[in-house]
Length: 249
Ligand SMILES: [Zn+2]
Image (cartoon, rainbow, N blue to C red):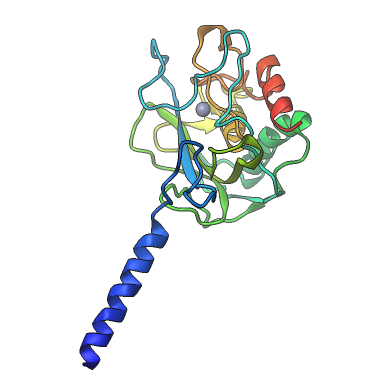
């Protein structure tokens, strides 16, 4: 009798945990059956090689011709200020000051047009990239991504469907692929991957921007490819500026 009761309780508990871990089924408006918002994630992969077309499985590229900007989802943006953690650990002997400064410069470049949206950065030597689940911490770190053609990866979590006024970004995690690239300041050494250049692009995803792959958008910060020595993505261009300004207006 007692054993049966315990088994029944364990079964109920197990079912509850599974239910909580599964996203609610969404209707055609992207809302759950009860009208609740559905949390999802999108991962942007920044490639080095200039492929003839948008890599398969890459989000973005839905911009109208001539606009040179797009979003993760229209209206999906930060609605409360949250700080972001930077882990300066890297394999290229870059100083904490340089790593923090390069990433903060990326945020400042966007916020010059969007207003203050992210909170302050802070240094945390144990912060790491995690795209498995929402952990409540925005992170910027170096690490290993198992593809030598991938410069950086940013995963953004949020509510990307339903009415645009209810869409929202809730977390981002940014990873610089360390072992395959020499990171640094391309003003001093044009053979390195410029950290500020890639930071501005990736943090654009963290603020809600999507990638661009159209040939007419190659000068934009959100263009989907980069190479060593490139610095033109450090500051947003006309399309980027139009997009971020509209998103946060
Ligand atoms: Zn990108």
